[in-house]
Image (cartoon, rainbow, N blue to C red; front, side):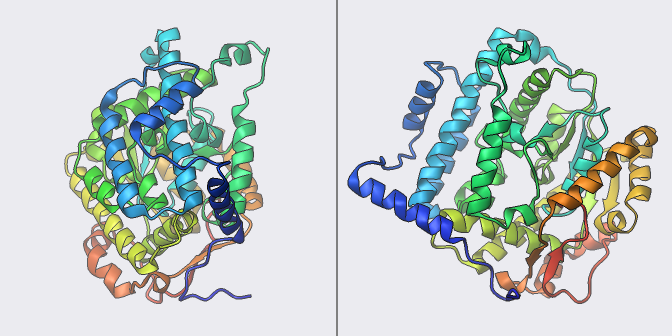
Length: 437
């Protein structure tokens, strides 16, 4: 059956069944009510970690309190949603405890250098994933893998894993979680195709500080979003850097290899990013803001409806139009203080037309020979075609937006970067580019 370009999709029956099961379980006493309280969540994490009680830098505590309050007052979570939220918070806190365990056991982790990372900066759905995964296929760089975004911190048996005595369970766990996620939201594979070993962004490492847009794309938490936009995120980025050091140590790779990083969050936080990574090299991606806004709203819609029974598509559209406008405005302002030789601009359409020519430009900017990386890039492109099952379909109209409304907000951005525009913007399908946006 053809999709209706004016109506956003419904969630799957799997979520309704799960939600009903949780409600019944709570009614008969077999499932405890969710307690979204910081103290309770910390206690549970400490118990899970076998008594470890050092969460590291306490900066995260205020974002946690603001986020929990916003969830309680605004998110309107269903039963499955609040149970999921409780499990997510507990797991993030558990990983903080394990991180401190490893930092104390191996102090050399925190001494690993983080030289000249390559940071891809662009709005959500602007081609950042494609650029990230092409660069990550080059073994001269370090990158995170998808299972490490789910479980970034090795368990306490990891020394036995390194010696070959035991297996790292994290990729197995990630595979199971992804299987459940596809049941909950089968459109995930079209919106952001992935697998446990695929390169992935570091947004989850900002979540470790209870910071970042991931929460806003998952839950209706506008007061938290506005609060986050007004703070200095440098401590969250400093913690992210230490998490990357831990991941690099667990991967047993040379600390000389530069990291490839990317998340749309960096659009909002370039000053904080550069405080922590002062020698970062920046690749800015650009795309028609009609497509960026529609696709971002669709991504947020498909996540939020899992956790809440009360989501207004027009409110989602307005919020992600506002958020996208804020991203490009802050990015344009931050660029004024960045040396031109530290950054390069890449158009989404240019990558579609000629990915090889565009990557030649990028490698020239990075002062690297692209030839050694080409076989791995070709292999990535072949694998990406196998991973992507269905196109991601969306429209502005689904979310109560018009092209004129978007362009009224984004005209300065379009003109500043000469972004190619589509004059006839109807239902869109993100199917041209390889493996994600």
